[in-house]
Image (tube, rainbow, N blue to C red; front, side, top):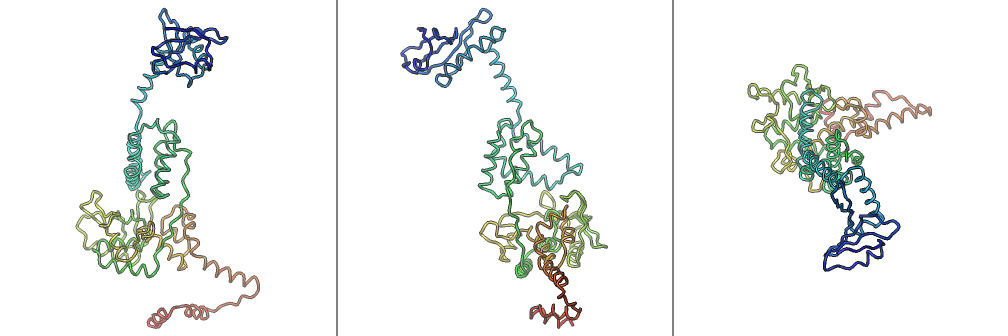
Length: 434
């Protein structure tokens, strides 16, 4: 059954659901296009189609449903196809080619998991050339495995839009810390950096509040007491962490060949340092005593100062579970809390000795060298506020000199003043030493 009417929105909206499928051609309107018709299905669905002969054969092209496609747009599409067919193009064949090309591209497309594998392979090459560190790769693999792989590993990289990227990062921050969010963002940006479009490129890192937890004198005492209940290897590694102020990755992987016993210096190689250059750490008498004892007790040919033969890496590692040595020590020392972010971390030991050094009167430059920071501004942004009393004292002297009220203090007067500031216990200790 076929009908011919001038297409208008009103006439097409009045079409009723038929008992039998039929066609209505667009004829009689000033904008009517020959060959344009609407296919009325028994389901009530109405579809615009365009029919025209091409190379002696009738070709029918589906344009879209009404009213999703307006009459005006249906006519424009029909005219466009008519023009293409007059030039020898078959729109249906072109559409098949496009679909086939899209299927081929999709088959060749890389998943995010495959992209990560390629990224790791390139990272490993950079490790061999000294551009990157093995520790960084292990961190990246852990980040991928725990936070990213479960969510996006099977998705094709071409299917991730900027909106998808933004939503992924929002989900991360809803369940994790700002630090994890920023680390994942950095990894994803790097992974997609060589792609034609990087959906993570415009996403910015979130501002993160710097952790400032340091141990006070009582907490340090409790920590040292708790160490007495541990095996020597765990006690020793914590003491070296506390007394050197170095990163746990460097201490855990400390090798005997890095120690200059004669000069009392630990040379951390470039491959273990973020700053991409070796770092010389002066070792105190207390640390050297630990190393001397461990050296005497070490098996012949042992590579690591803190070995763990049963582990894949061959050296001691930090585990976060309740069975870990750090969990036991902090639990025993009263340094563990059920509140998130309140428990003392291993990195807090590094921050503690640096902070104590500054508060005791050490300068930022010395602290920066100890910590192995690449830029003194990194140290200053974290520790500069701690030496405020020194600045205040110096400013007071300068102000007094400007105002003409400064009175030179003799060495004896200064010693008397400093002794008066000591606690009773410290005064007794001083008297015992005299």
